[in-house]
Image (cartoon, rainbow, N blue to C red):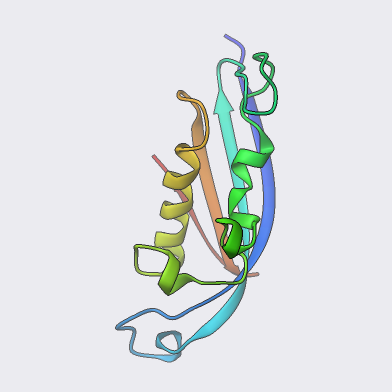
Length: 126
């Protein structure tokens, strides 16, 4: 059976603090987050931008979070005001996964990796 796997990476800059954290991460600070998303499918699909079934999903749908916070993305957002979860890297990755799944066709397996720093990252999938 054929299988396709897309990869994309993007960055966004945001501020946050981890509520209840006993240490410097409990104070407001910022990160340049790096995100990698892989999307795997056994079939090709249409998208909002291409009506024929010729892509796993559109890269635009995977990179929504790179948009400015005023346009629905996370770039230059205060994450504590935007995300309905505690703003740990783990929860940010989980949030990105679920929000991205709403934007893409059914049957696609996602893996979301979020780097908070160059040496600290988390991967989330279901």
